[in-house]
Each structure stands twice: as structure tokens, then as C-alpha cells.
Length: 476
Image (cartoon, rainbow, N blue to C red; front, side, top):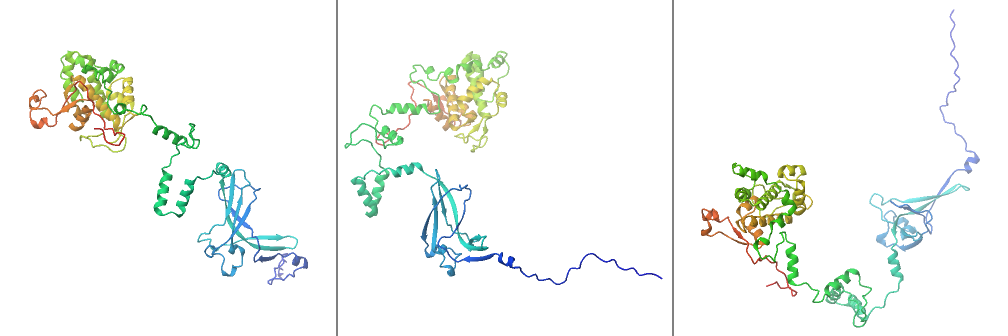
């Protein structure tokens, strides 16, 4: 007969399905938190933020209040809270207890998202267990460095105003529009001239700042200190992009000496031996990258004039450098087209590339760079200086009279621009006449229209810049 097994009794107690109500004890009832809202007090607390500012804890503030107008009342306070002092007044807190910073806390208008937001502060009393909630003001605290100099100036007593100053003040307040404009014009153009007839002291006025003093000194120059037209013209000529001419020269060769135009050190290092050897061996005509140099090379080598031959080598060197320049931004003319100006600034290539193009020593390249470049950049002024220098060297090579067409082709300049370069050197530039066609290798009037003949003669006359006289009129 089988026995039925009994289930093992569980030690866990079943949870009741119904919640059991627990009565509050008297002790718990006495410790329950009691919360109350204070409708309005005479001085509300302030919740202040200080964005990006570390505020010391020992600051003390002075409070200032003003009554709000109807349009200044915040939207978070409805008509039912008109009795609140936050709604009626605006608070400002100021502190100057810090040695160098002034602190200012102001209530600022909230944006659209926080327009109805209010702030509250709770005050808890642990003895009574009561929590009082009071509405608080929202302010932003900012700091500003105190102007010590301005504060010192404010403390100094102001000087008494003169009768003229008082009249001007009355005119600004009660005068007509025309009178106020005249007073403002007098104020803007007023310069403190220092001692007057009432105070004939020769000591400089202490109220005049250094800028005004320098301006007054420049305006009070005597006739002996003022620059003459000749001095101004000399300064203007020295600033132009052209080689300096010897104005006291008695021979045409001394106006632009080749040794001065090129430099003694560079002349000694210019290589010309391969040109001399090729001509001595009666090899074919030497062709270079320059139209001007190629046309004159054979003749100069046969003449035996090494100075002119080195001058030709220097011309070729400058033209090769000019052709190797790269655009440095700012535009520029298209390749192959003649232009009357350089366009934008140009940049010198790397040293290795320049050395490979020119085939001269670094000392020569450095001397050229310092003279015709601003660092590694060639500006319009430096380009004009290089062109006028080439024009002066060409005059020395061609015995001070030449057709400027060949050099203009190398520089990619038209006849007008090339004529201007030679005129700056003091040359007379003219179109070739019919009797000169054979001498300059011209065959027709059409061909002669693009050629110009430049000639340098004594006495030298350089173009002058127009200078305005003391009265503002032009020089005649």
C-alpha cells in the first residue's frame, strides 16, 4: 500500500493581499514638516549669478530701490500679485569694498522662455519644523575695473569758467541751430596756443599735449627754417625709382658711370670668358635670351672693351632674373602681352633655381637682391628701378644714343612706357626721321612707328615734379 507524501512546509510567510494601515505615533506627528508661503515681506532675498566672475565672499553691498513704471513691470507677476514689492520696485546692489573692482548687481529682463519663471528661497527652522518659502529677486552680478585716474580728476576742483566759455554754454543750451553749429565749429578747431597777451610767459603751456606742441612748432617755423623749392625738388628726385645722376658732371660719361650703376665688387665677379673664347675661335654667333644683348654681343667682344662686355653680362643677368619671377598674388598681366605696368608683386624663386638660371656666384645674386627686391618680393617701385637702371646701362653701352625698341621687347614694355623710363634719366626721346631709317635699320614708316630714339646730352635736365606754392597754386 503506497503512502502519499506530504508537502514540505514552507518557512516563508505569505504576504498579505491587503495593506495594513499603520497609525501615526504622536512623536512622528510632531516631527512632520510644515510648509508655508510668505506672501510679501519688506526686503526679499536676492538670487544672483555672476557669469565668468569669481566673487569674493566678504563683499558688502549697498542697496538702492526705485519704483517701477507700468511698462517696466515683469510679465511673471500678474495682476493678482500687484501688492508684492518685487512687482512694484526694482533693486540695485553696488559694492566698492574691493580695492580695484566695482561690483554691480541688477535685475535684468528675462527672455521669452523664462518670462514666467519665478525664484523662491526656503527658510527652515529645525526647532519648530516649519519651512517658510519666500519669493526672491533674480539679479546678475558684474564687475568693472575702477578708473583711478578719472576718480582723481573728479576730486580735483574745476577751474572757474571764463566769460567766453559761459557764453558758449548758454549758446549751446538756448541758441538757435545756426548758433550751436558755429559754437561746435569753434570747439572742434580750437588749439591751445600756450601763452597769450594776458600771460606773456615764454614757458610752454602745461595743458598742451605733445602732439599739439609738435603741430604748433611745425606751424611756427621761421622763413629761414622753411624748405625752399630746390630742397623739396631734391628730396622728390631722390625718392624716385631711378639711379642717381651726377648733376655736376662736365662729361657725358660721368653722368651715369657704369662702375657706379653696377658696382665694383659685382663687376669683378661677372663671367665673360666663355663669350670671349667663342668669338676668338670664330664660333657661330652667340644667341642669348635677350634681343638687346644678342644684337650687340659680337661687336662689343671684338672692340675689346671688357667694361662694356661685363655691362652686357649684367643686363642679361637682370633680364634672366626678371623672367624667372613668379606671381605673388594681386593679379598681373597675361603672358605674352605687353604691359605698361608690372601688375602685381613678383616673387624671387629658390636660391638653387636662381643659381641654375643665372650661373653666377651667390655674392652677385645677393647684391642684386638687396638693390632690386624687398626681401624676396619685387614691387612696382623696385620693378621701375630695375628698368631705369637697365636703361641707363644701355645708354653707356650704345654711346648715349640708341633705339629703345630692343630693350623694350626684352622688358615687354611698349614705346610709351620705355620712353618714360628714358625721359626720367634726362634723355630726349623722339621718333626716327626718314634720314635716320638707314642708320637704325628701318625699312618703312610703319616699322618706324614703333621705334623711338633716346639721346642723352649735356646740360642734363631731369623732369621736375609740380610743387604747390604756399598759396596753394601750382608752380609755373
